[in-house]
Image (cartoon, rainbow, N blue to C red):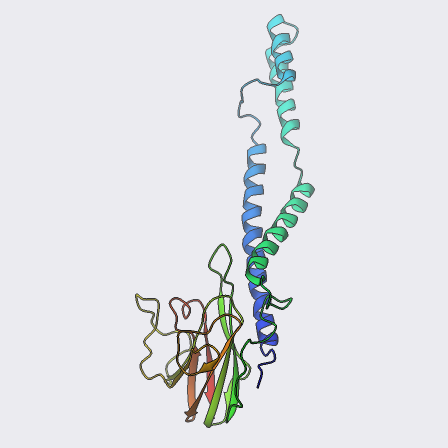
Length: 263
């Protein structure tokens, strides 16, 4: 069967969260720059070399005795304050918001570009045709903010959190722009999803793995799921708690994990 686009509920929601994070990042950067600019404007007492014509005229009048030193100082300060107030608060807000939105758009555009992407920046559908999978089918969306100038958040979302014990198939679709994989590991009663220790190689220990889908357009283990593609695996699960995750370098620590309960 063709994977016809699962993931827009959760992938779209995750994209919205990521977009808000990107907007918050650029808003903080632009806000800091404007704050520093205004802070500099608020210090007109910091003397700069007399360079413009108006200040030169004031200096000449002071030299000829036409004005006193106090009047010279006050008039020069007024000139500099007036020159420094080119950016008022309302203008600052408009420029800041516009700049943050434009930078966010460029960043998200870098992530979402490509011929096989929907208007949300994710593939319109998987490029793979998967077989009729047996048992309960858990659709998994692998999501990232790759392609940006900084390493963004990643997510792994499932279309259900509870399934019945027995045969369970996992259909993992890569909605990001980086290679991903799906690994299934049991969780003990005391374990929490996302809390596994990460080694120096950026990965967790896969001991006890029950299955893996990392073969682009194929079943089982492989070299990773290419962007826009899918992989699948069918396993037998006993009642309990399980963690589905991506264990490529740094991906688990970046947030690519989810818990599944088997009843």
